[in-house]
Length: 328
Ligand SMILES: Nc1ncnc2c1ncn2[C@@H]1O[C@H](COP(=O)(O)OP(=O)(O)O)[C@@H](O)[C@H]1O
Ligand SMILES: [Mg+2]
Image (cartoon, rainbow, N blue to C red; front, top):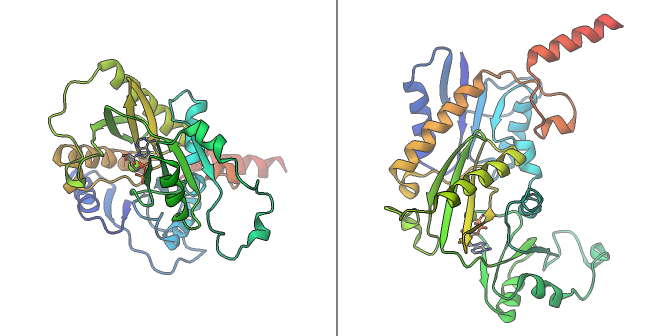
């Protein structure tokens, strides 16, 4: 029996619905359940073929457990190695290189020294910083937000130099990005599953939380939607995420990708609404079930392979090990 485990935090609706949906399909040899984990023993392989991870970004113990599971053949949605390495500024730089529109963006040195460091740790820093060059490039209408953030935490909308410095002074030891504001007409949040399926959700971040997923949206330009679908796939394929949301703010018909490091995207019934919820439950179920066929996915024992190079099926690894032994 191949087990699909769901690892989750405070969310309520999605994990249970996913488990129920998979089990209700009665697929022979596949069953889903909530992950149960205690002390993790180095010499014991976790029992899951696939784990859908919704929370390890907040819980280092879970992240370490998932990496251990991955080296033992479990397929994790999403790859915990790559997710540990990723950040938003890398995302933007990659997007720009791939021809996806992104607003002018910089990263800035921490306002306060990170824990256990002093000004002596920062002797490579240009000082004073060339703020004029920053404001020339990004402008004075921008968003200051963490390079490794999510959930709108520590996000500031800046409209003047004074506002900028007030917000920067509050950013503690976070590494912040400062990004030009997209004066958007349309805004879309897209679920992307399995690097193949895209679900475009009109979203209005200017409304209160509960009303952001736009009901009864207007007709959108088909070309714009096509471009959004293509760009969302380009980004998720390049980053190797099997589950992600990609957010686009559209100004003058150009979709700017502004947030696409959401590998445990909001999937709460109460926020996304029934139709979006049903879509995401069904698609993630399909993906998790399909991934059980790859189990055990034995990675090559080198860093690049863990980061998400093409998986090597266990059969191939065994065969090549046998060949090597034969050649000796
Ligand atoms: N460059 C930008 N232009 C316009 N709005 C932005 C920009 N960056 C962020 N925002 C607004 O701030 C919100 C949160 O920023 P986002 O980058 O999505 O961070 P998080 O990962 O915390 O969701 C976005 O949904 C959007 O409404
Ligand atoms: Mg966001």
